[in-house]
Length: 327
Image 1 (spheres, rainbow, N blue to C red):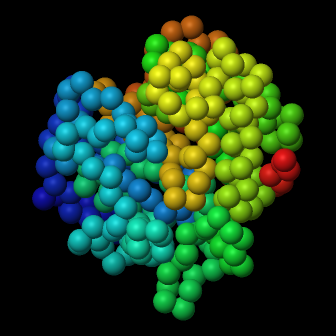
Image 2 (image 1 turned 90 degrees about the vertical axis):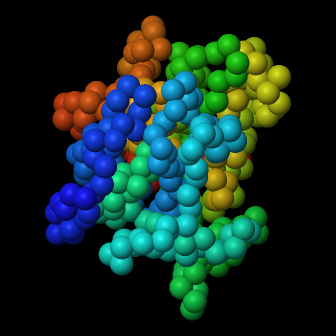
């Protein structure tokens, strides 16, 4: 056990030399990455219920990242974790949320020490919803009710939307990048500022900040984009979730905007065979990419990019948020 001080917190870190990726990338390197990216990453996850994908035995060779919604089978030995684990330090913020599964005691990452603590638990992937905790009203029992289908006074609100572009069989990240460019035109035409992010796998997500709105309304808006893209470009987009129908086409997964769903957070590691990161990128990069490698970024790449360009997802943090388009 190694004791370290992180922002005034003292943490005990263990097994720092243990490989967590098949290429030998260690837990110590995972922790170092999250400690160094924390200042940039925290504004994108702070005040959101955090779901973690943990790999206590490391990422198995040949692993592919599960879909951000958790619909693809997980790699052996990995698991999604929503409740705060036994032994969670008192200083780690937690927020109970009442869901259809019962009350979930979520971890909320507010400081670098929380990210380091999670990395020490081999929580490689960090996923968050599009709604924020502070926008909702906590009940007398300290529990926040998950937003539902019907409007409810005091429900938590979404302050961004995500267009999750999921490529079917036979497609790669370049196809997802092309789809993102097409979707961005729709968002810009609706008065939104689109922000692209590689998923760290074959997909691309396009985010946009919106004035706080009902999560169900955000979902309905993105569902409308799903239908519109499939109608105008049926050769390239598909509205169906059928695996067979999605072959060779891009599916706009509007369900990622449902309150109960979550998406890989900006700057999160992915549990793939090689260490990769869900990376905010520029539209110029997406348009110029000619090889999948052009849109694949290692942790070292991301740290260099942030040092050079700053936070390419900064538009998601603006205070001046446009309203969710109607219809």
